[in-house]
Amino acid sequence: MGACRLPLATSLALTGDQADWTRTIMTTQIEDYALIGDLRTAALVGADGAIDWLSLPRFDSPAVFAALLGRSEHGTWRLAPVDHDRCTRRRYRSGSLILETDWITADGAARVIDLMVPGAATPTVVRIIEGLVGAVRMRTDIVPRMNYGKDAPAVRASGDGRLVAASGSDELWLDSDIDLAIDAGAWTGYFSVTAGERVAFTLTHAPADEPPVAVPAAGTALVATETYWSDWLSRSTYAGPWVDEVNQSLVVLKALTYAPTGGILAAATTSLPEQLGGSRNWDYRYSWLRDATFTLHAFLATGFLDEAAAWRDWLVRAVSSASPADPRIMYAVDGSSDLPEQTLDWLPGYAGSLPVRVGNAAATQQQNDVWGEVLDVLSAARAAGVPDSVDQQKLERVLLDRIESCWREPDHGLWEVRGPRRHFVHSKVMAWVGIDRAVRRLQEHGADEPAELVRLTALRRTIRQEILDHGYDSRRRAFTQSYGSPRLDAAALLMPRYGFLAAADARIAGTIDAIQRDLTDDGLVLRYAVSDEGHNVDGVPGGEGTFLATSFWLADALHSAGRTGQATELFERLLALRNDVGLLSEEYDAATGHHLGNTPQAFSHAGLITTALTLSAAWSAAGRDAEFRERLA
Image 1 (tube, one colour):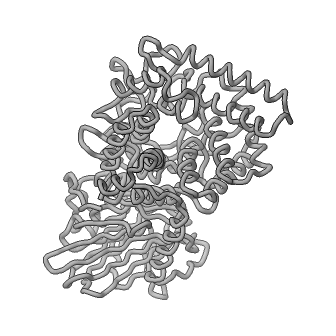
Image 2 (cartoon, rainbow, N blue to C red):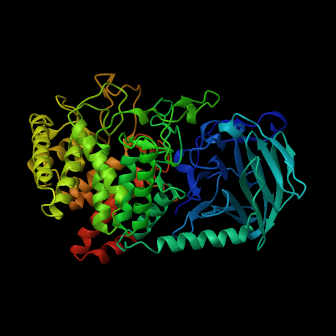
Image 3 (tube, rainbow, N blue to C red):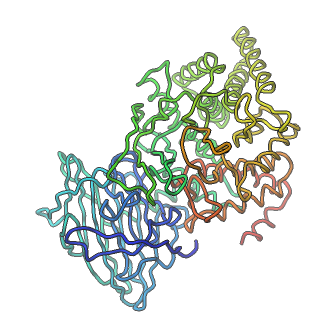
């Protein structure tokens, strides 16, 4: 991957006795962050060498490093050469989440290797500095701040030489190859690394009422982590022209799974804004059933059936442990359903974007599309070879009942609008999808339930006709966002994918053209127009950037409509929007060229994989794989 990008500038400083350390940086650009993780939690590492985000012990726990949403005083761990603000270049080790950051100075070169260890007894962050050439003078500043940057821990040295930061019920244990000074609730150290030399730091989490666990040597942790990712990625069945890009996105999607349960996150962060300085800042560290289905389709299409089975089992447990007859549209990664939304008023927000939120009020919304999406992916998993379970069949019955009882009702829709409920066309389409998958299942089993088959077939026909009658605007020659509205919605691009209408249908062609013409910014797709004649239509002030997942959907729709050349051009442009280590956020600001929204975003990476597979099949069928590989080399 490429060189590290430059930031915008501002001044951030530590308070108290560490006021001598002042970093002249801007709020680091979202695309300047890389991800490391262990399938329980994740950290963001900036191109300046700082870990500015880390929640412990799991993804949705309070952060111990929260400078991402504030300043250095809210928690950070910087490791970089003295007097150097930006790295020279960085990359992931091939097919892994092991981050290598190179620094070249006037006196030499050094590499920082950052990783977290999947399967370790406790969440573990390992930072290894390797000397490459000459001698490089390094500095580290470790500033833990518990409870999302609010609480300064008590910092001390233990009897065995380890360093401890304790606050409330949490402790952080630091193993260091060098001596560190304790100052103002932080650890600071200077050291030199010469060619062939290694210096390592290992940070672990432990509950305050439990003894700390033994940690492996940094080198052992590195080998174990590389082996884990190599073994996992070897299961991929994809071998098309975009193998590196697909593999990197597969690793990201795996990193956004919570190994203890199988739950799948929407993103690793909270409150990164969809508009700088705006209020569209949400907590995405939970498992939306809808978002997870897109990730699961990407996994299923590349041979990762175990992930689909694990998620299915997680969902069955989550629904049965809460209210079996009343499934939610989202859950925490442990399956709990209580996700109250609150604001963290002590954090100033990323680039001043307020409020900073934890929890998500969307958990209580009615979103009627979700049940069809889940039934669709369970059907796809079955077709891919994931065996059914008795509990899964009970769950499918519950979801089918929910569609039958609610499909005529207005809802908050795919995009979770916080305004009034509407009859969203996509929600109706997904109701049709859920019924359609149930009909197909009954047809596969013959005439065991003939009355049920007749009833559901009739309902499928009824839903379809209503959508055609009320969801299509003949004047716009396009399917719209909701009944009676002329507004467009990018979700209409999914109609061919789900089999509602053939891509060759004139109504689909008209919808694609309308979205390209009226719902794009510099060729990239908006979810929907958030304002209409100066008034917000979704109950939230401000605007947002182009949505990367929907831009991949446009590429898919263009291909399905026979416009594969245009689809490929759009796809290659989207690939170019990835940051230097291959990550995509939720949105993209076409005016500034910067990422927006939470990162990395599962929706975006699932879209990349799905489009790559779709186009790969087309190019392979045309015998042009070799041409493409040469073109991309």
